[in-house]
Length: 475
Image 1 (cartoon, rainbow, N blue to C red):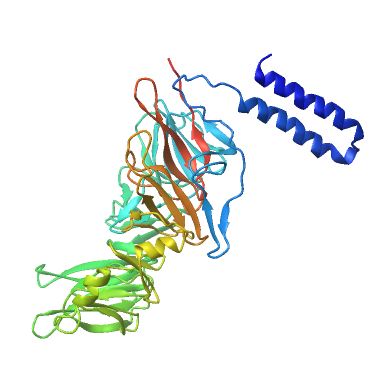
Image 2: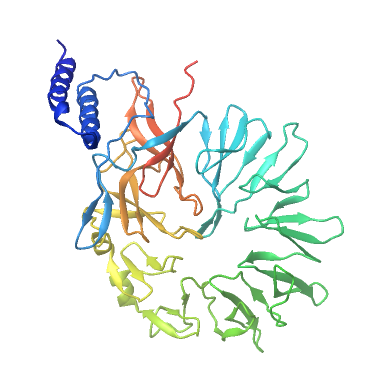
């Protein structure tokens, strides 16, 4: 008798002997034993090596490991609940391509047809409704933004425009596009005016154009001196000017502040900052152009570096941190803060209290004692309430590509998802702040033809796949 059948019979016999002594209240125990029969059978079941991936393979459930000392939850590197595995009850999507979620919706494609789904896998826009659908993350220097603006083209290819994550058409026509920073729709009207659209369907029309619209405020450019010189001012998206002041240089708002420049009586440019009310919050006192504010601080450099190399100021213009050459040699240079309140360089991590820790100590505070390093540390996703720090550990390499695997730290939840994801075949993993899902790939090895195999789909913030791309047709 095969071993699996023998074990099944043994457990069944014990179940028969045990059941008569049970009351109706003990049905759960009976169910547990029946479950054990299946698990024992699965344990000894031989799997055929066909070179294909079973994306619906069940993953047993185990509790997350938590250290009492640091209260850090860790998705472990082996066993159930492991990052890169499939969540029980996950859905398989019979599609060819899965695009990242954007404001709670994701574009998927099969053949030459496109559809839009929500975070439950429900269809918002069915296949063959539009000729194409597409959304992309906007990368603005160090930040990434999911703007919720999905570009469509009709089936006859004659019309295109933009719709939102609910499938509602926001604007259509050849005169429509995105603003330079990809935050809003921009519609160039026939009468010379410009309209700007938001994902909730609101349209704001201006007699001219606004540049670098951020935090509801844009820059107005005007030429003077017979067109030989440009000057700048600011207007709200609603059309209201926030100040009557004119500047020789102007930059987009960030963290409620905007860097502005004005030439002094000697023609030298000096820099300061205005706030969202248009008030000059920090005077024109900097000769070297400072950085934007983020997490309440901005980096500035003195013209004379005899005392220190650079500093960070607060929104009152007070120096709250500075570094000399000796400090830089010890800790490295900090260029900026992220929106989640950390400044990171190749040596150290600094928080907004200006406490500096080595990267080794920072990782150790999350229970990561191996040799680890950050990936994508220069970038951050805007509006994400649970920011992710992606990292890798030496020796944890992909079975498919031999390149390092990556995991992430959920900073708000203080949870570590150990490295399991491939970043060699995709540029970024970024979580949609609405659905809290991210498109990701985890390597599974190679098939009999030495072709890399991956599980791909949408993962949750525990690093488990909630949607998996189907294997596709073999014909």
